[in-house]
Image (cartoon, rainbow, N blue to C red; front, side):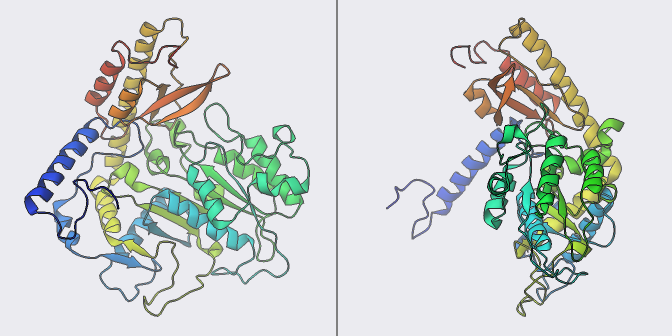
Length: 456
């Protein structure tokens, strides 16, 4: 039997006085945590519109295909389709397209896209193509070592092979000194190595193995964007186009945070990184709008090119719709909240948001640079990674664990001067005002804020 603590749900429940006291204490603690929140890709500046509060008393669900009304009438599918149309315009996705709002963030979007890619490349019928005849070889998934961890998980769930599993039976690896990698190498900024990706894609094509290529628009730690323009141009030269009977590759982009704001970036170099699905001939893309627009719960969007969408195998009479999504029951309130946020802000509102974030990021970077020059003039212990165009992230040498915990700073190992070092990052989103940056900087300037060489 588990030990009893104050949160244990007893058979008789909890007295209202006790329950309310626990919630008040918890809410106060979370408000304090939010006040110092600086190191993860979620906007904490959320305002739940009072006009939407009546919807909190409803079990608002979007069941089945987003494009079909279905039998469950307490839904928000009209709002869902309006949000999908917005993202199709934002990413220049050619018509016809299809998508849905996920119950999770981009993790579900990645899993759904790879599921569709696997079935498509294995010859399944699509909404516009018949099933491919003849023997099909299972696809190989190519993603970088800086891709989101959900891609590796999706491969395990879907039993999709990476180069490490598919390559050894075919011969020596053409990259990585002949050793087959699970994930592709990246440059120092975190962008996938284009040459390695193209070599492996070409290698597997020679052995009749189609590939699922997963690019990233804004990596988790540095915010780097893979060079989709160069990659797609090269792929179109090296691999044949998909046809009903010859299916060569699937190109997916995990847009997570960055794809929400890059079209509004204040500098042309950053805007150039914004996804143009038409120019890239993308097959699928996903993103996590809650990270940029702020929502009380995770929510993602995944979109596909309609001709490549494999047909939903099941149409349950119970829901009156095709069972076309991964999550089945999806929170209908997500669509209404997103629609409301996007309409309230407009493009000008989002341009103002990204401009303020951009300015504060530059301010934080300069202040950290001056601080590190003062604390470590020889530049032996404290390092600051260069800013990347299109990224709202500042990467710096990790302080003591107490500071990491206080400011919710995520951390990762990076190579510096040939040695692994622990780094943290500041993610400048709309909740990250100058006062929060100044608080973090003041804390980092205190004696003992960073580990000594022996402690490191």
